[in-house]
Image (tube, rainbow, N blue to C red; front, top):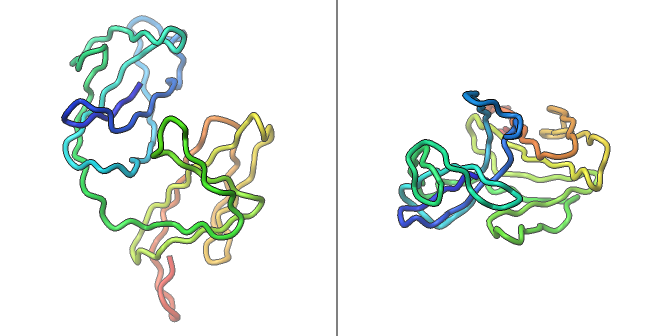
Length: 186
């Protein structure tokens, strides 16, 4: 489990997930670490937040006792962070080729849209170098074969990704801001 908590101890959002190496494969005294990228959901909270982690059984829902700074209920503080007011965002516009947005039943801050065969979206040119994160999923229960995704910028192929069935994958590209005679493009 990974929970982000406000100063009142209320959960702002979570990223509960299975570790990359299943716990049944862990050895006593072993160290297991991995990196996980998540996107901070839009949430009306500004201030200090605490990240808590823990392990629990998906069968019994019982949490395991670990060593570390406990926050109660077998959750352990790993760090604090400051959530700032949202700055200028680059909202994307879903143009042609998209199915209607869907929202997670248990978390209204999580939404997604599936593409049709070809889909287009745009966002405002930030006029500076940017890193573009592209969160994609191939629902293995529906699509058994890997899917090819091609990212095109201004009509020119930029990169191609192969998306395998679960789990979801996050790709990112760094775009340099370009200036051309007819105006800016990124």
